Image 1 (tube, rainbow, N blue to C red):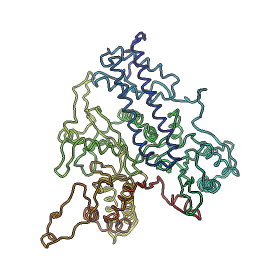
Image 2: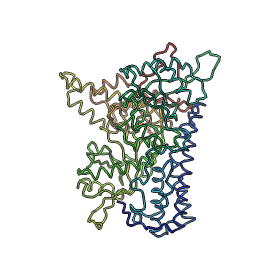
Image 3: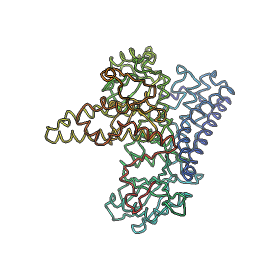
Image 4: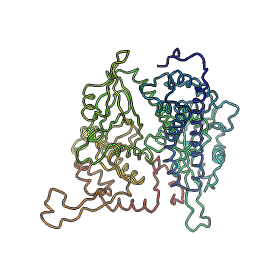
Length: 625
């Protein structure tokens, strides 16, 4: 913990100030570039530069590490920072705190300071006095400064009869340069959707709509995000804006904009901001104010996940780790080997009271796993930078993580020593008599119910027995169908994002609290466009037909979809649901057609809401988006 008595009382070192100022300059450069790239998303949306939007989302993830490296290099070159005495570093932190006064992104600047400091100083040399374990500067009410030109959100005060007009004004205030196809029609749909949820039509004195002043951009969509307040009730909402192609034969070929749906309520917003989706592009002067606003709409969502959803994943990591340390201090259960089928590449453990899993790459793998540690890390980086379309869990990557040894079950320590000895260090007792387990490298993901366990629970309830009767059996059959349908939908969404899962076994997918199936085992993923989808050749001889071995030549990227069945569909109830809804996943031509569309440059749409929610279903003219 921080000990203020260790800090010198005087700030008398010009060198310490110069180092602090250089670090602040490094952060300011980072956030300026981050914000510039985020603000350009509006132009890319207006010009339908979808490939550019995806490329920018991918490249922006690398900004932070590049700026940390730049800043560290400068500090070493100009100040020999790694050779400075510890009292200098103590003064550097105090000077840096002074520079945070009136700063608009103090929490991000603190995280940047931590990243640079820990990169320069060896782990055995820096300690909590040299980094920000807790925030030093409050982020409350930062935007009340007189210099703020654009507020975080705007408030509008409609009457019931002017609600549609006010919604039209909200849209206009964003200044999109493309024309809307029919604003009156779309705002009418939104008013109707609000009316279904907001059943109390009596307007209270405080009736208002609060809307964040920046659009949220991701892939082909732009989202208006806000909340409706009436009396003691608040209703979160998001309005997706999409391009719609002109009618065939129309004189104006320019795409028009439409409001495609109204997402209302916390559950809809949680799906939009899911940890399994790509980060948004949002132009924010004061990110903490955006997080505070969004947290008021989604109180169940951790702040770390909101920061990550806004593209500030390093701040998300910082807050996650603080939450984790807080949880450790207020719990007593032990880390254990995670339930379920053990992986061949990853060693997975968890803390039962904490809703995340910890994944360590093993040191060696079975013969059928032709891979390396660096290749596996590359797959996880691919997922981090790729559009996860709501079907691939985001991961937090950490190095040199210390855990209290007494919180580990003996079986878990033995498992780590057996399968990942290079990743494990057990420290000597410190001055407090504590021993630490240090994991050199790990990934952390949201915990989900493994799909194989989810289906097994349904089997145990009698769902797999067509002769079984009673409410448990009925719920079991419904659960089987729901799980299988969602599994197929997940694979098809991944296909649209140019991702082939590789290992498609049920155990590699999880079920979220909203019932969505999400993929989380990345060591065998490939781009669809890199795969060769084939039909199993017909046997040429009786010996080949009766052979228990594969007798035909198989290339390293060859995939035979018809062979998925024996591994996935052994249970009759599962097979029935799968063949009813997703039989085309066993057809090589189905996969090949998706590959060809992607190679032709098409970006297929994957929406963060069911297509039945689209207003296009309500219009007489229902044409392609």
